[in-house]
Image 1 (cartoon, one colour):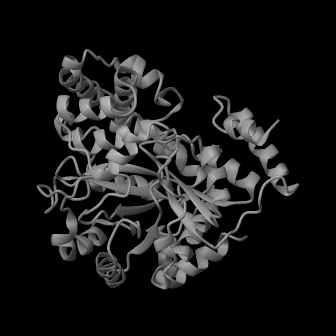
Image 2: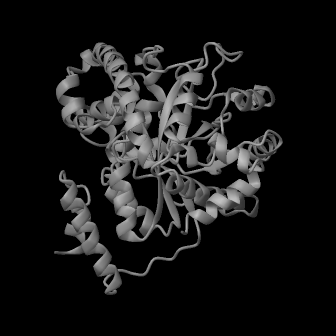
Length: 427
């Protein structure tokens, strides 16, 4: 079987086929049929897969992470832990150090920041957080908890599809939630989540089917749907040979249309932040606040310039520590040096663990964050290994995770504990 055929099989519907294709690719790599991987020690703890929204199965995501030269990689799906076992199995085949996590949205309503736009572009009082290093013993705990979240999200998704259909009715296009979204663009039946991106990706497909690629579609987006298209997005959409075309249409829709179709999430879908912090502790996971910071230019063209938590960050970070957060996660490529210098100082002052990863959910995004190679981010590499060490240590016992009460009592120093758990990653 050719390299191209095997690479396609990494996204095969059957897990065994995906993993067998990966094994064959590894053998071909060892035989010299592929250029050797150049590993420069990069880490990435924020890789989405098709269990939330991504072009990649967990197996393909792990392969691409390996081929990009990553030293470690972490799966990070929205509201789903379903891809973790496959991602870890793929990592073992590749000899790649990996870790598992998920991203959730929580309510800050009953906090001093309940009326603020925190790190969620779409709704005030709702924040994205990440649960990192979920050990094997904690996956079932989290999966059970997510059932209620999934039901609530499905109700809201259907309402948003109704709003989309009202907007696109003049275009003589209609979306069917059960068919277009659940059947064709999500892995809901296998434990995946359904996000706003799924809805808009389905819409992108219908728009391409209706108007084709290029000027007719651009005209429909601008003059019939009233969306603004940046110069960067216009260039991508003008290129009819662009292999990631549908994802670039999605980028425009996400940046411009969400405000028109968004339905506020309730506390069934986005539970109180304290409840999820307790869930993380029970599962042996590391609970991290996801710093966004004020946005200027979006790398993927799917975020408008907007202000978030920077104006009150000095108050927010200590409050996160008091709530029981273990960490803050951030992406060096997304923020300015000034933003990150300030954030790092606040994390250090409040003894919050620092984690990083490069958001991967479209073909536009690189698995390697070049900005993270700067000397001031060397701590993020150690942190990535500490995540792996924590997940391994707590495999059968959540009480052995890095932030479990017994571990903190045994080694109160965050820096010393980080080094100790990073060392466990290699055992």
